[in-house]
Amino acid sequence: MVVELTGSMDRSDNLFKMDSNSGLISVIYLKARRKARARSRKKSKPEPLVPQTHKKDDAAVKERSHSRRLKTVLIFVVPALILFAACFVWLNWPFASQQPEPQTNVNVPKAAILDGLYNIDPNLTLTERLTNILVDAGYRVDLFRGENVTIGLMENIGGYKVLILRLHSAIHTDRFLYLFSGELYTESRYVNEQLSGAVRKGYTFTEGEPPYFALNAAFLGNNKPDGLSGSTIILTGCNGTGEPYVIERLFERGAKTYISWNGYVDLHHSDEATLSLVRALYSERLGLKEAVEKVTKEVGADPFYNSTLEYRTH
Image 1 (cartoon, helix red, strand yellow):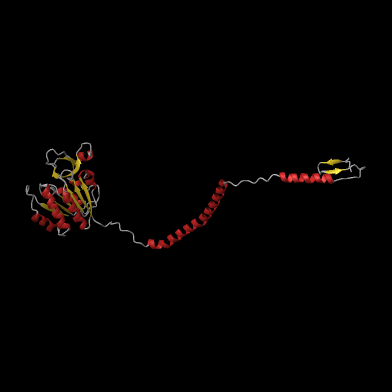
Image 2: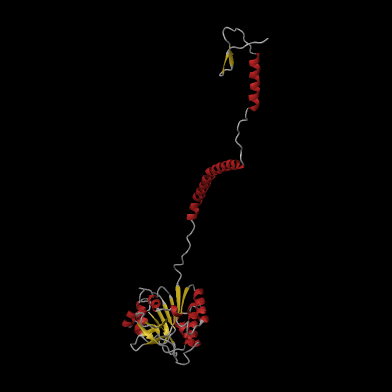
C-alpha cells in the first residue's frame, strides 16, 4: 500500500501537518527516522570539558593552606609569648630592684708613679715593686712613663694620696726648683709658660742628651684646686728640699708631706732608697720619722755626693 503524503513539515518541532483533505496520517516512517537521529546524536555527543588539575596548582593550594595554618599559629602563639614575658618581668622586678648596687670604689685611695726617666734609664723592677707594695696597702696605682710624663700631666695632677716622682730635678739660677718632664724640648710648645718662667729648657748631666721641658715645681698640680689635698709627695731627684718657697706652695695646695734629697744624688742610689722608704711607710706602717731614719741607716747617704733624705710636713 502506498501512501502519498501531501502535507508540509515544520522544522521547529519535526511534525508533519497533513492537508485537511487527505485525512490519512502515517507516522511510522517519521518515528523511525526520529529514533535513528536521536541515537546518532547520543553517540556523537561530545564529552564535557573538565579542567585538568596541574602539579603547580596543587603546590599553590598546599602553600596557601600552610600559610593559613602558620598565620593561625602566629596569631595565638606570639601574643602568648609576649604575655608570658611581661608576667615574668613583672614577677621578678621587685626582687631585681632589691639587689645591692655594685660598689664603685669611690673611696679607694689612689697613688701615682711618674717615671719620666723610663726611656733613658728604666728600672722596671723598681716600679713593679713599688706598685705591688701600694696595691697591697689598698691603693689603686696609676703609672705614667717616659714621654707620657708631660708638662700638662704635672700641671693637672691631682686626686692622689701618694705621688712618687721619679724625675730629674734641679734648682735654676732664679732659685726655683724645676722638675724635668719626659717631653723633649721644642721652642714652639708651651710658649706662654716659657715666657712666664713656669716652664724652662732643662739639661741633664748626661753628655749629648737632648734638653727636656722642665716645670717650676711650684706649679705641680696648679690647675687642680685642692688636687694635692692630703697627698704625700716623694721626689727622687736632686736638691728636692733645697728651695723652701716651692715646698710652701705645695703645702698651700693641700700637700701634707714632702720627702726628697738635700743635694745631688745618684739615680741608682735614689732608686734603692725610694723602694726602702715606700716599704717602710706602706708595708711596715712605720711613722714618717721612723721610716726616713730607717732608710738613712740601712741605705745610707749618697756615696758620691753625701746627700741624705729629708722630709717636711704641713
